[in-house]
Image (cartoon, rainbow, N blue to C red):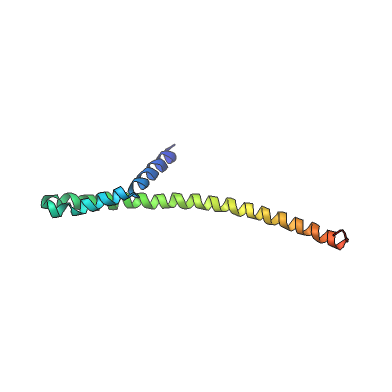
Length: 104
């Protein structure tokens, strides 16, 4: 249950960070000290604590989750392709035997 909840939180956070709204929000946050000099401490806290200690690890974990999904999908496709190759080989063998027997 914990893994499922953790994966859901990670996915939601990564999806929220990967939006144009987040980009514009971070841009506005970085420009705040130009208008209000007193906000520099807040901007530094958010950039160092929140973004570096939360957002980057979340994105890293999300990449690992997506990589695991992709690996499972590739393994399934590989198994399907091997089954198809076995089927084609069997068909080729039947055709070869039919040619040797003069049925084709």
